[in-house]
Image 1 (cartoon, rainbow, N blue to C red):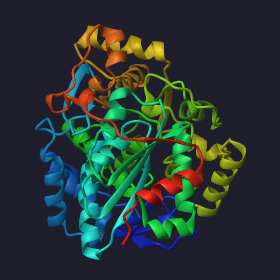
Image 2: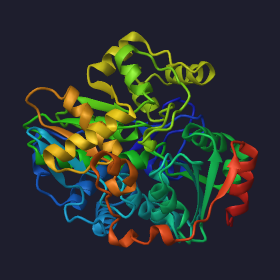
Image 3: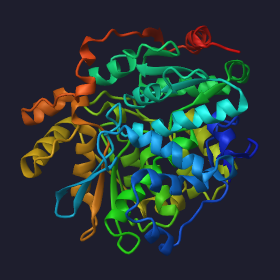
Image 4: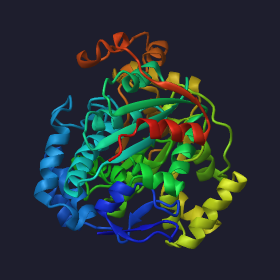
Length: 464
């Protein structure tokens, strides 16, 4: 399997090199040079497999010769062995044709664990083989950071620095990052938004001398391996509900577009997914784009669903590349204009192609609280704010007669204040995190300034 950049100026490379590189040198994102596809018979043959086995079967075509199937299967078995539910990603029925796909049974109670637990093992394997080390830098709107830290903590070949927007995560999200007492971990609270944090990470990768000096790598969903490791749970749910002989729709609360892009990839591999519903909060750039081809960035507004407080959805570039017929030059020019003008000029034909599959839905904080309450009253299901947005989107836009699966992206205990306001119930943390509020925090507050952030990363990294 070979990978190319969405902007066409970076040299093609294999999975191993893409894993370590993260972002392409031309500022683009890596995508498969050709998409693997499964036949209907092959999909049927995957029904009923344990999650770890299914994940290995689906991910391996994206890895190719970089890793044997047997080694990958051992990794997936290790990655998901410690999850808090034997099904790893169980389906829970909440209405006649609506199901919650619970992706929060990993160590940090969020869907990011589904990919991160595997990524940590992949990094270890590749770095040991190459006798190299890397400095991972990542930006988080809440959940990516804790999942990345948990996956990379105490690893001898990795230093990790995570940027989060100061005061814009929940207390649980922040503490899950800042209370990890590992010497290879550093947390930085940036005085700005998630988009500012994400821009700083991209700027560090664009600073070629700094990138080489620090041996930078990424764990955000700009890293293709993150997206590849998220495809299996969409297949897992679709197969459980009758695919490939039955169509299944998905409703995904999303900010950076990586999670719903993984659902698109499952469709591209041959699963019958006729509709992808994109849930947004008041930061509704994706919903506006799908409704009226208005991809105009606005100020990020804090909400009850902080992991979606994003206006620049990095992974949309991968979909844009496909919508533009894999025209790297057109993709690069479109992204350049978006950064320069704050508005993305997507051709009408490409936009119409997107709206044939994707629908957008936006919900404000009051609507989010109302949906948390409705779900609990009607089905006894306790949802966090992000999952509630996905649920409301499914209720509004689900295709008639088809099962729709809502990506339940976080445990309700990560957002206890919102859940309590909506239901009167304050969800407790699982026993393994019961003392979270008693643990000592370690983080540094820095301005939204590239020089300051690079100096902090340099001071932390333990280079060869």
